[in-house]
Length: 223
Image (cartoon, one colour):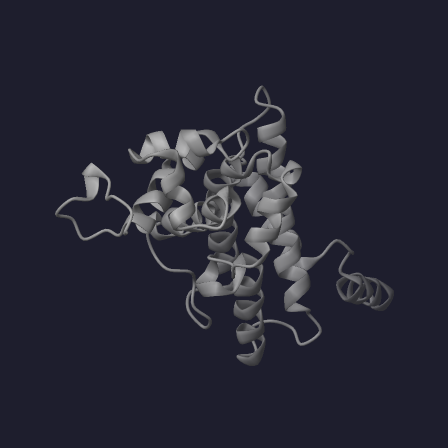
């Protein structure tokens, strides 16, 4: 016998599986995954506790699907598409990527609180593809952008796109996770001048312009 449909679904187009994922997603967005029980999800969905097991092997499979859906919805809610290679300037595009990645991390990471203490849920998440960046993840998406700019000659050939992407995503983790661990600290969105400094460092590195220094010394010796 097919499981009884929740009252909220009668006459609707959403399947019970989708309804359960949506209900779990609302809880995940509000509370994170730590401490969520089958009963919590069933009450949010308006179904009996056992109904979940008609559609999912365990609670972790449902929570993984809910986290996946939550991340997709957060990204979809962002206005505008990611910068395209060859458009605007590389500097402006890197800043756009950094602003976008910071906003996404600030909206997404709170839902993952407590995840490290749930190995079964981590394993279920590992079975799913990343929902961000068109399935490439933010790091893969940005690395692909930098590589495309390299092919256009707008990024130096010696630059490793994966290194640039790792630095940007690492900055997001540091700023956002720091805020989650210390709520009394500064907000995860940094001041604009810090974002400018980060982009400048990505563009120019940290070593002095030795070529410029040598040119300056040569001009002095000739004068």
